[in-house]
Length: 177
Image (cartoon, rainbow, N blue to C red; front, side, top):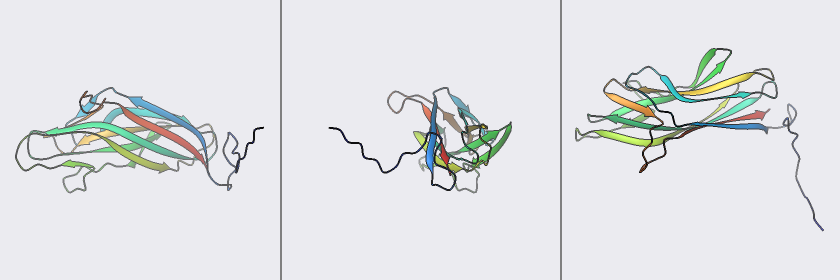
C-alpha cells in the first residue's frame, strides 16, 4: 500500500495574489560566445534571455553566473558587470557593476610587483526584480561588461581548459506574489 502526504499543492499558475509566493516558471540560458572590451562604457557580454510572464505583477528572480577573464600589464586590474532589464525596447540597469576610479569596484585585483595581472572566474549576481507588468509581457534580461580603464581588458565567456569552460549562465524564475 502506498501513501502520499503533502503539506500543500501549488497550482501551475502559482498561488493566488496575497496567498504567498510560488515559483511559476524557471528558464535557464547559457552562452560561451566571447565578448570583450577595454573601455569603461558597458558593452553587451553576450549573456541574455527572456521570460514571458504568466501572472500580472509577478516578481522575477534573476540569477547570473557570468564567466569572465580580466587582465592588465600593470599592477592592478578592474572592471564591472551589470544586469539589465529590457521591456518593449526600453533598457533599465538593475544592478550597476561599479567600475569608476573612485570605487567601489565590482571586480578588482591588485598586485604590487608591476607584472601582468590575470584572473579567471565566474561573477555571481542575484537580483529580485519587480517589473510590475501584465501577464503575457516578455521581459529580457542581459549582462554587460566594462573595464576600469583602457589599460585593462575584460573578456566574457573566455574558455581555458585548465581553469574553466567559458560558459556563463542566466536563470530566470517567475514568482507569484
